[in-house]
Structure formats: structure tokens, C-alpha cells
Length: 188
Image (tube, rainbow, N blue to C red):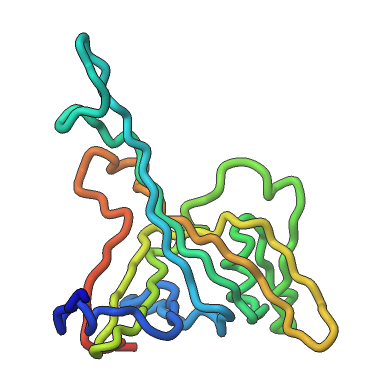
């Protein structure tokens, strides 16, 4: 029978995750409430370098062409802040009476402005031994289609797929796409 080290058992992720928009910034706010936790996916495109005499996959002859990171979660909130996250391409206007309205018109088409991207989206996942894994996606923006269903005897939900984005003017520098760290507490 396998014996697990205490460290391995302490690092089991338990319970749901909690997510923040612009964590650590003056614009920080809690995202949600969410339903069903969150899922972080990091994917890469690896290209095998071709050379004469190649017998198959070869150590040292693979190249990472692309890396993508996404945080998938289901939000129960449809506040103005949540709508702005869910549909970053909309025009947000104040009607003068304190009501915020969202409009989708022909000006919503075209290049998405830099202001639609958040500095970060951060999810904390609780560990069995105490502390949290902190997963931060930089230059984050939702790219999931917006759907809001009013369902009898249930809550309306908004699915989000919040992608991390590289800085377009800093691709060749030490630009961070995402970061995973271990922290003792959520300092909110």
C-alpha cells in the first residue's frame, strides 16, 4: 500500500474557490457569488521540431508556440459590475438618475478597448493543511457567450470563461500570463 507524505496530504485542494477582480489593486472587488466553484485551465501548443532521421518525439526538440489560461466559473450575480465583466464589449452609460444602462449597438463591433481588460482575476483554492493556492490571471477578460436564463425554482446563472491575455506591446519581455503561488491567508 502506498504511503503518502504529510506534505502531499496537506496540499490536497478542498472545498470551492473564491474569486476576485483586480485583487491587490484599489479597484479590487469580490466576484460572485459563484456556484459550483471554479476551474482553472492552462493549455499549450507544443510543436515537435522536424529533422532528418527523427524517430519520434525527441527530448530537447520541442517548442512551445502558444500558451493560454482560462478561469471558468458560474456567477449568480447580475449586478452592473458583473454585467460589465460578462459582456466587456458593451457601452455603459449613466441615465442621469443614477441608473447604469448597457447598450449593444454597431459601435460594440471592432477592436476591444484596453479598458475592457481587468488587471487580474484571482481565484483562491483552499488546501487541506491550511493556506491557499492563489491563481492569478493577468489582463483578464471574459470571452464566454452571455446567457441569462430565468428558471423556476432555481437561480439565474451566468457562465464565464475569463482568459488571461499577453500584453501586445510586451510579448518579448517578461510579461506574465498567469501565476500560481501558495499563501497562508486571503488578504482581502
